[in-house]
Image (cartoon, rainbow, N blue to C red; front, side, top):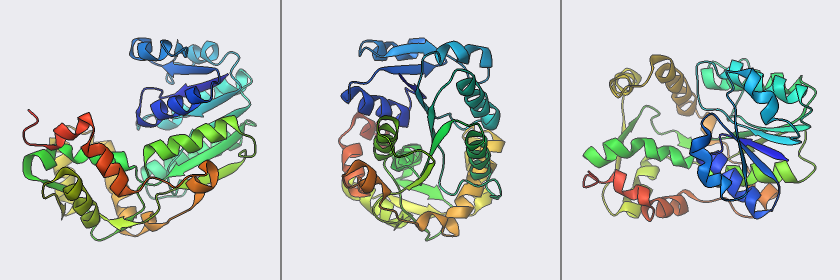
Amino acid sequence: MILVTGATGTIGSAVIQHLTSQNVPIRALLRDVKKGSHLSSHSIEVVQGDFLHPDTLDAALQGVEKAFLLSANDARQIEMESNFIDAAKRMGVQHIVKLSVLAADVASPSTFQKWHGEIEKKLEQSGIKWTHLQPNMLMQNVNFYAPTIAESNNFFLCVGDAVVSHVDARDVAAVAAVCLTEPGHESKRYVLTGTEAITFTEVAKILSDAFGKEVSYVNVPPENLKQAMLDAGEAEWFVDAELELFSLWANGIGAIVTNTIAEITHRTPTSFNEFARDLAASDRAKVFSNNSK
């Protein structure tokens, strides 16, 4: 039995799809099981569990051999994922594939990288077999730019001319599925990137071509971006952590390119051009348009 957390999210749902195609027994862990009604129709067992309530996790992990660990960004993320790891150890889970982040490190000046580094260390010390997936910025993050692209055809960041090897969440999920179903990935840390590192000006050009309208990247001072994010309703702790991450990108940490996805999945990772064309042809394309209301 393989348990998938975050089963209705961008990466978790794609992991489910890959595992379903392999006809392996799957259990999806959700805080709200009603959101997983569509999963039950595919013979996937849906169970309720909450990382912040450890007493709900033991039953969910009963009989589970392997698990995919993913949690949303949260101020209590270390506590949440640690609770899961502790429960997995109690229930005899043999292997956890953890979704981490590029450059995770307990000594990182970036909050997200530091948190994931601490959780990785916790998992490694648990005695459970582990695999860490460290993706670069997800291509799907361009969805966060939709409101300003729809309003003004612009999106705003504070990373200058930095290059980033964006990676498709579907490719990350494909790697996770392999690690959960094939041997040889234990005690491995995989850095997952796309095939090329590009600037956000190039991202804007690719989006322009895909959507058939001019899209521009506007570099702004960090303090301006922070205020805009706060005005949009983001929590200040999250905004500050995002700005720390943007600083890492501005300093070149996202430029790394690896061949790991191709080596593990035996297929070429999705290019940003391919991703943008898929996005433009999807139902989500309308939210990038000022005619979407």
